[in-house]
Length: 136
Image 1 (tube, helix red, strand yellow):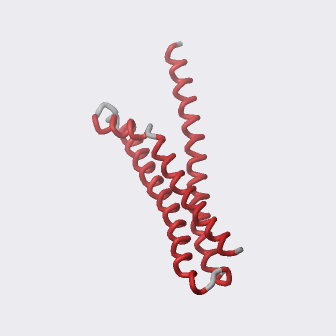
Image 2 (image 1 turned 180 degrees about the vertical axis):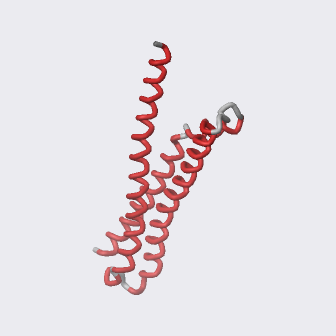
Image 3 (image 1 turned 30 degrees about the vertical axis):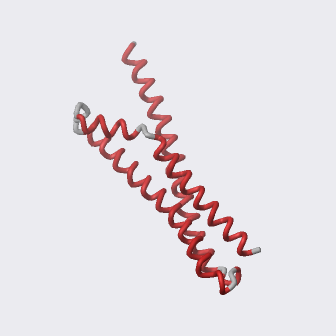
């Protein structure tokens, strides 16, 4: 009976993690797509900018979009490798190593995702504000 309870708890935790990971992946995909789409929009709408401030403003907008996308790509890269090392440690039965313990501990740092999301959303807000301001 105790093993059954432990299995239910582990499967429940895995289910929550899988759901979290789907949302995190979806959010990251949307942020990257909108980032690339934002850059295309800036280049497409030449008429929105006057010649005097165009170069500086476009540079700041594109830079903001790139910062947002870079934050998500870096986070995806970090999470990808964290999860691969956890998978490898479990598959090869190397869960008793110090390295595995460090990786598992790192995988619990949700603040990494929060910081990347805040950086992305702030950069998108700056770019969006500048774009809307320039177009009005």
